[in-house]
Image 1 (tube, rainbow, N blue to C red):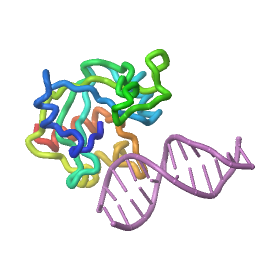
Image 2: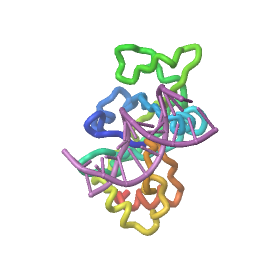
Image 3: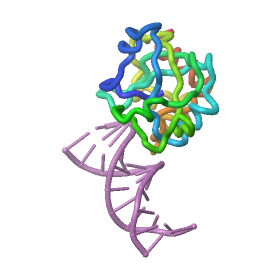
Image 4: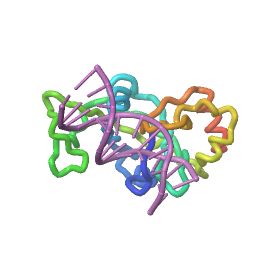
Length: 149
DNA sequence: GCCAACGTTGGC
DNA sequence: GCCAACGTTGGC
């Protein structure tokens, strides 16, 4: 799950009550569908820094609440406001995530790219712009290994 | 800051 | 339904 560290970083999550936060603001239909239909409570996810000086994986989160309507879309003051989404007919969804572990060191994007075992990883594919992408079990384990955990 | 890649918008 | 124009993402 991508996030720009300038907007919200893993230490912010670490300081959050219960180390838990809403993963709000997804405004892409493909990712919306994942949040609404596929991602389940108990699932694990990597916290990935995008658009950062040093992009890469910085830790592990778990989904503690599966997809429900993104209420930020209903608040005109919110940066993610979307007048076409209503409580009766919500357009956007979010999940709640909890920090499981912050890695001792970031696993850099350049390291992901350099690892042959990860060559087919979704997030590394050319032109990929989805803010949430699937990770296979093999990839998951390899990244844990790279993180030294 | 640049720019490739992709999604969305809106005229026709 | 097509497609040009525009906006966004995100690595570099």
